[in-house]
Image (tube, rainbow, N blue to C red):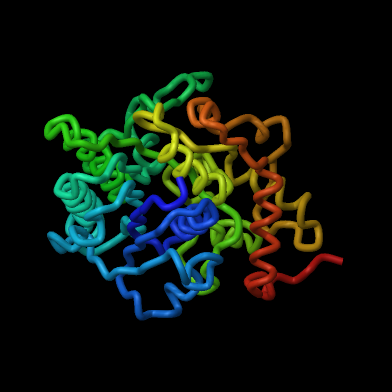
Length: 342
């Protein structure tokens, strides 16, 4: 695939940065879209990647500005659409959370349709587009959740729990498939449903990344107050595996439809127990009263990622990517405020 051109939207993001790195390692030419290509605190890590000087170009693009992606995508072979606001609360959630996700996706797809050269679009989705529905919360504990499950938009809108991010992710993914079915463009569409991504960040200045949740557990912030505590880190995956899933679904001609990309189904209590073992110098400040292993080592959600494994993805075990996360947090000085044990 060396020499092919891939557009990665939202290229400076936590997962997208790893996607860019993997694609550069495989010899692709990359066009990355970011909000401000002149902000070195946001994009410097991309320009420092091996091969970036020769094969990475960064472009300014706004999700809601119609036509912003036309020139970037024209002539490209593949598009990985990873750009989406990671915002959970806003004064006007429809305008600030849902619309950017949906309209941004449509803007990218329209640009792909104009291009005539794009063969495949890989859409970054989330378990947030799967886990929020009456069906999910009323399921049998032994029922297996797979790619056929969707979050219910009416439930997200009416639950009164601020489920705007799941609404945006589910609506954007659905509309993407509807666009392809209705317009029958020259490209096909696959979507990668990632769980909570953990591991190191390529951008040392990234403040909006999943591993901060691990820090919360180590310092003992109250995770039990969540309206759906079983969803806190329900399904997690190494960020590098999540990135590789995007590349594998892009490259494999037989790939189609949705791909669940999760390695572990663990509650926050289970994460706390594992963290107390892999980082005994810190232990964990989470309240584990009554949390014996027999009770809390049961999977919070039974799910399957067999479909993506058939493409060649071998998952990194949770204990390994959690250890990588803690080591990175230490390297960044994020755990300096925690008093070591012993």
